[in-house]
Image (tube, rainbow, N blue to C red; front, side, top):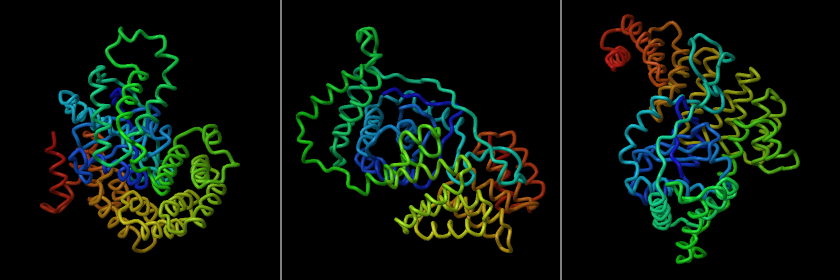
Length: 420
């Protein structure tokens, strides 16, 4: 598999997606002697069929891969292969440079309220959020035939150590072969330095023939359900109306289909249709926090702030750690602006940042602070995370000149000014 980092990339942050994907690959990380708690999963908003691992602590998975890979075990196989490259030392020379370039270029987006929140002035209302730019691609690394074979073998071995069924490799390579067969059939394999997919498929088949995979465990219904819901969510948010209809026609009454259609309806302004679908899901699964999160998004877009707050509060009662939902609730509270709302919004943002620092929390905090000098500090932090140091330092200078000396925000603003 080619490693193709993107420049100017948009990385999605979403509690549900990151939790489900994290749970799926956690056994692999443990088997590879990596700490799941220290590993950051980045969901790259790009239709490329791709994934890669950098530095042992950053896993990048493209939405094009997630929406096309049909089973959770096949997704594990992809990640196991990429971990195989890491364990095999194939990325040692490139890893640091790739990590720097990726992190320099990332634009963080949050699914749900504030989707693709970016740049501008903290005084702007909720209707003024804007999407991040497109994705420019640059291939940094192409692995050789031997390196790919080693990564495949190490990936299979890693799946076995993690007690995961390695037949996911067959599914992945069969799917990749179907996608590339018409092109690769015209290529002389001796003229290129990387292996054809058909060759890799045969190699894995031979390796798995020596293993009794029938005795290996298979994913349970809960795991499959959660993975299908994540795929539906991404399709609903990111794909065209035509593709949503093709993948999830109105005749499909499954939860995943209703989820995708409800999100797609919300994205296209059909809030009534979105609300009906979401309430159907809640009636079926009253303890699923992410359906209440979606209802909160919809009510917010309606301008029904009280209902949105109620829905988000219910979501937070049902999920232990949900920094993106906390930030979304903080945004709605700031918009509603009842007595005590802005203070609660600030506390929610602070708690969210303790769990997972994300730009949206700083942005909403700046909105809630209003004319307080701490708003400039929050904006400075926001622009630092958005890789806009000039704007960050501008707000940091303003914050430093107006904040009490040696206050926490004053010290943090000074740190930003001293950051080269």
